[in-house]
Image (cartoon, rainbow, N blue to C red):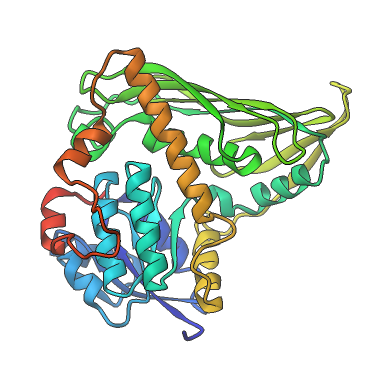
Length: 370
């Protein structure tokens, strides 16, 4: 592994552009090798705009590029699984846009494949690589606010797009929980781990995906830590605050705009009127460079999993998301989820080490650049 790592991006949509712009701010570490899209014209335009050396009109050609060391998968949720398998089978490290897949069994297959191949893989939960979030986690772990008793986290906006938009389309694994709820779930996981109980509620859109959802999470005492609770809410029907609050036995943490927080407020002690300590961070670009740097650090060190977004957290968060969606659909008497429909159309391999994923062109026929 050389000092500069060659990047390829699979999918030329909005999030790919945001990531590419920040990747270009790391010229001493990252080489912008190639962009792959289902459209050659779109790939050409993307390469010219963001400075990639090569543009491919198929995912297969991108994955086959010998100068690509790691692929950032920026396609729609329903494509993540098969595209990631193709990358791993081609010997490429992978950074997969959240959520890593549409269900925990599929995430397990990807992680098993990466482990078997000796390749790095990480879910692109950029909030967990954010320096302010990391600093907050260290302070909470050190007991600065006492024992964590409850966490609340909300994220939502009123979406008025068409039914075939990826957020509402079951075939593209749409719904608020997978697209928005993944952030609150991962943040709660960072501080409390996997819940022992998940009770999900919510509403379904006209297309059958969850459009507004809330969940109560329960944690039994473990490893010397007392019992705790958490509540998470996401919505495609209402503008909710992007807010994380951590309530301890001896203090409180408040993070507004946790996706890209300008500051973190920490109040120590039980005095509600006490002046909080404010932690501030200066952001380079859009803030996506932190996760890119973590990927490259791990690759140079020969690490397969990042301690910032470890495989264990990806799997536990995916299980929580599965349980949350199941709770919403049970409450609405919906017999089969978007996840289940996707699994029926493209079942998970029984043998994670077998290569039965088809070619990249078949993946492209079922997906679209997000």
